[in-house]
Image (cartoon, rainbow, N blue to C red; front, side, top):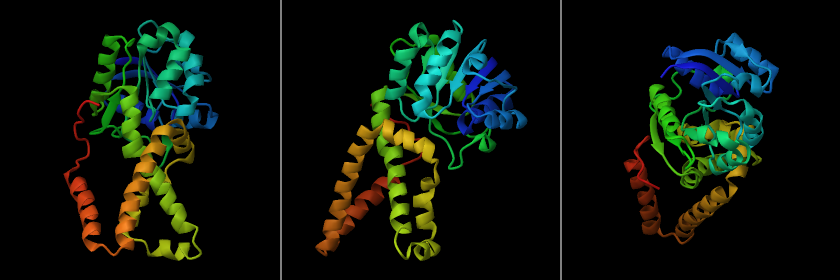
Length: 293
């Protein structure tokens, strides 16, 4: 299980938390980190998240037995291209991107013979506040991690990837990249889109500030994810836009049903639609085991 040299490409919340989790288990030797921002590298070093602040992707990954790519999804291809010539013959490469089809396409375009060492991953974890200052060792405990290994992926490295995520407390399941992107458009990307739209719709009204001052726990809970990073979520929504737009159309249709019942004064229909949603939500459990997709 021990990782002698861990390279974190993108010293933020996700990469930093993975490093801290392995450090808390005494399962990592040296953590090398690279971020495009010198300030981020310095902060990660000062906080003890990394041991070496590297000035290039190549410097960080050279000699690493595990590499975790934790950059915005649109920076994936350039990062993979920079590291490809410097990956060791047995290096395990993983990412933490919230979309997978684009990541796989970038890997196929850049990694060459190193493609067999890549195990795409998506931890279902995070916070509204991004950045290495918010990294914590417990971030991945009792959270799902989706692995989308390729046909070319070395089976031993896929097993090691699963073991590492399980070691930091995660429950692992495997999906195809296509099934992953369709599912998370529905249950992650669309909710963020809806939260962004709701907050903007309320705040832009002339009385928006007063309405927000009156908001209670319901608004707080629904709108929580609207405080997410614009850089991160702008990338995700654009990269997975076909699937997200499809899910948005389905939500508009469901909203139209509710609006139609309200317009017609159809109490029975309105209550039936609300009860349908209420029953579904009551049966749902965080971290439930998905069936094959």
